[in-house]
Image 1 (tube, rainbow, N blue to C red):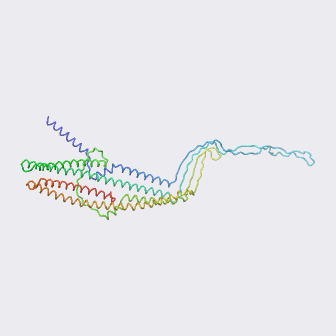
Image 2 (spheres, rainbow, N blue to C red):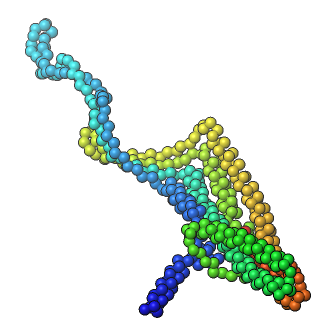
Length: 461
């Protein structure tokens, strides 16, 4: 029965361990970047702006096609205009006829004779008027204003694509730095714990020597003090590791309390960078420069539109209607009309002229901005290339330092056991090894972060 209970307890422990492992988010640098790209809100915002630009481009394209509209109206006239007319009122009479001597000889045949005037009114319309109207309007010629506006819409889409690429590039760098900072903090804790175990062993040795009368109380106190100082440092580093992991969770969009395991080792990398080649790549690929170059093209097109503002525009419009009445005829019938025309501003208070000058100034500003950003990109690339190459050299130096410190500690341990080295010198050797290992880890992590910044600087991210 007892064995059965133990089996059940072991099974429950294994199940709990498996559940905890399944709930742990295991990350390497690449998966951290992918998660950040998926969850980042700035990327979602940039994508929404891109969709807005695409829709605006479609709206500008619609302005080049015929515009069709329909309307239905009812009009009630309080007073209907009318036209008053008069007509002679006639009657038929025979006219008496006399001979030259004055004697009545008879009457003529009946003839119409005006005997009065008749007045009547003709209505010029109807009190109730109904109309169903369809209108088609097409701009025929605008001196390129419509097509240039559409081109600006296309450039705006390209600009937003580059803006989204810039946001993704920055998110990649942030995720990379956050991951390696958290990994560095965790590895530093491991190195410090290893050094702490070694120091505890040394303190035990010193205590044993003291118990056997081969060491002084001062040696024990110094060893104990060194142990306490390392424990205090470890506590600070552990707090820093927790903070670095919290920052990484926030960067990746992970819940604050989520369990995260970093499955990657800090390893040396032999990549270096050439300044001239990196500058060339940056000037060709950087999304900021692509945005500004699109802005220059947009400003040029805007200037062309402003130049054509005072030129005449040609248009064609046709209307078809089904209405009641049609003219003076009551009842439903169809009607249509077509208009071709030119429109041209004569005087706008110099607003169009000032708009042109403003467009020219914006064009000059964008060209200057491109030159300024190109200079800034060159400086950034120079700095990131120098940082990467320096971190590569520093990694090699720190690796050699670790090898030397490990050999020195091995030698110091032998000499201490043989009584040829003081306790303080041994502790200095052990501290030097721990510091060398931490410095090596820092160099490895800094190299990876410098590489990410360089990839962003040259437009690879």
